[in-house]
Length: 254
Ligand code: NAP
Image (tube, rainbow, N blue to C red; front, side, top):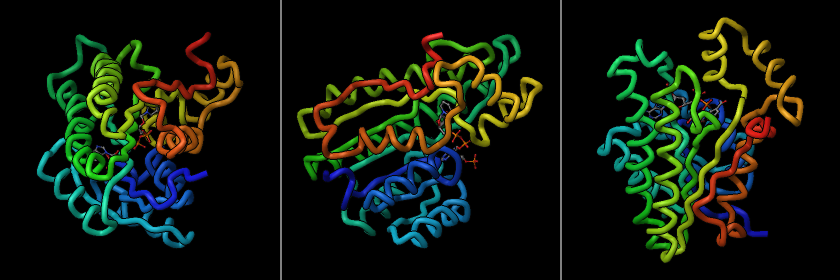
């Protein structure tokens, strides 16, 4: 099974949470990984973990919503590892609020990081994928894409990523590049800890509430998302494109 062995991957928002889980998992599978985040020090900590385990990685500092920074990061990764085959659009922020209290800034930053960030990273990466006649673009949507109270900005961005994914699948398919999205349900990270606090509970309380309702009776972990990313990123998934995989323990069903 070829998987991701020898491929070069770029994971955005990879200094913690789901992104860090994806970066370490792809590296363990033999990919050389660009660990991109706002903080170089935080990205370097994940790189140190990967290299200590025998993998190859490069820390990259960039704001995904800034085209010049994205291009510089992609250039640095390609200069270091000789190409770019797998892009994981994972960087994200929350600015939750009910519509009547949501500011224009709250709307703009969520659109900038999730949607514009995925557009800029995909645009910069696709050239190298087309050169290699091989590419995998995987974007992080959410179960919130279908609507969630207090998340008008986030839900819109996450559904937008599904539209972007399907369009990239159509445009890039002829060049050996697939595009798919993953829609996680509750995954324990700093982001869900912040959400728990916003709604007046704790991460433990949220985990218990999720476990009581979802069919698989437990909350998710970054590794659950990393496993799904590894599938889409692998050589063997070349006939799978334009799909949205809900990795949510079945929460969409109940
Ligand atoms: P997280 O722990 O907050 O990690 C997100 C990372 O993205 C952070 O390291 C953050 O850096 C970075 N980031 C933010 N803005 C950025 C920018 N402009 N450029 C580059 N990096 C940036 O979040 P997570 O829970 O792992 O979520 C990862 C992705 O999965 C997000 O897209 C999220 O929407 C999605 N998701 C998560 C869940 C869940 O339950 N956790 C569910 C569905 C979807 P700073 O910390 O410095 O801001």
